[in-house]
Amino acid sequence: MENNTLIKYKNVEICQDSQIVFSDINLEINKGEFVYLVGKVGSGKSSLLKTFYAELSVNNGEAFIFDYNLNKIKTKKIPFLRRKLGIVFQDFQLLTDRSVQKNLEFVLKATGWKQKNQIEAQIENVLKQVGMGNKGYKMPHELSGGEQQRIVIARALLNSPEIILADEPTGSLDPVTGQQIMELLYSINKQGTTIIMATHNMNWCEKFPGRVLSCDSDKLEEITAAKNTATTTETQQ
Image (cartoon, rainbow, N blue to C red; front, side, top):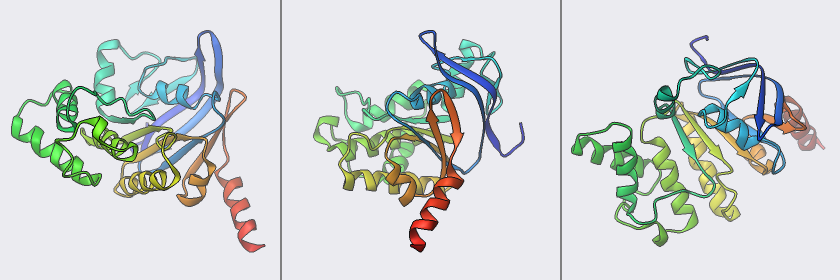
């Protein structure tokens, strides 16, 4: 792949439970892009994201992420792939029996960090980055939904990933908190991290412009140009 290309799919088919979710996907995603996957619930957005971190296998065609061939990736290589990705889930998936600090420490130790001072410095760094510098001692249940999502984003940033995959990151948040989370993701993107975000909220595509891919009827279609044209027309009227 070219140096600037992080993901390249050519004529890819994705199946789940023997059902075709997508057929004939052709996709390239480059460094520094903010990419939306839009579509109704059940349109395959999450399934596509799962193929990026090898949770769901791809059929047919060619599928590469970084230098990994997803058609042939060996199980022992998957953890190394996932270290280059940050994943933000809608339902947080924080460990409820331990503090924010211990949640983040667990991830770093699981991905090979050993030096206590380096672990503490990295946790302090990512918590500051998401505006939660003084919340490390808190338990997840002591935090609001928006605060928990900020911790999830901090967790995604721990290994300085090249790509963050965000699956409906504002889906369970109120509009004001959702806006704050979008502002945070957008600022992370402006610092050079590629963001791929699944959402059914088209308002975010208007407020925080990016590349827009539509998931519908087993097809993945770029609609960025059409959306931007529609927005320009509305502005002129």
